Image (cartoon, rainbow, N blue to C red; front, side, top):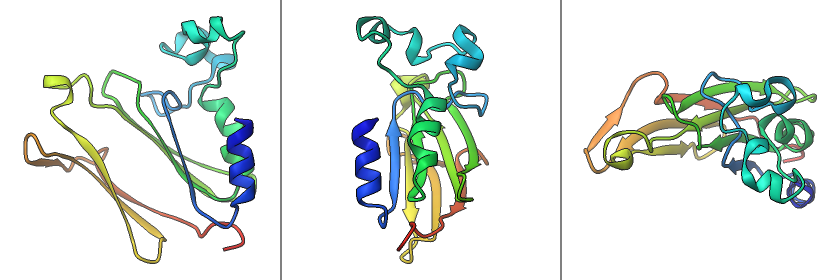
Length: 160
């Protein structure tokens, strides 16, 4: 996290996206070991790597508090890892008022290991709008449900 904070601070005029493994839970909350403990299954603090590294891991709430919310250039976060429906979204404002969409997308539990489903993100040429749709080249189909097809606005990076 120290390295990511350094990069985000050094390049504060550039848009940043956090892509990580376990950040958001399927119920549209961030992983939060302090609040939920083992009630949120698959939390990084409950994995062997946490035990092997003296708990040198971060869950979603810790990443939000100690990284994403501290920089006004994060435009979104993406994570997988979580089963059930494998989908979730929440938007949270930083202390500076920047809205940061956070998305969970995980298709591994679908037939054939995910049927090739991909999350496609199309950024407008001015960088202020992102259109999202899930597509499977294996099935040659798009999922147009509200959890799989949506858009969000992006504020310009700080000092841009």
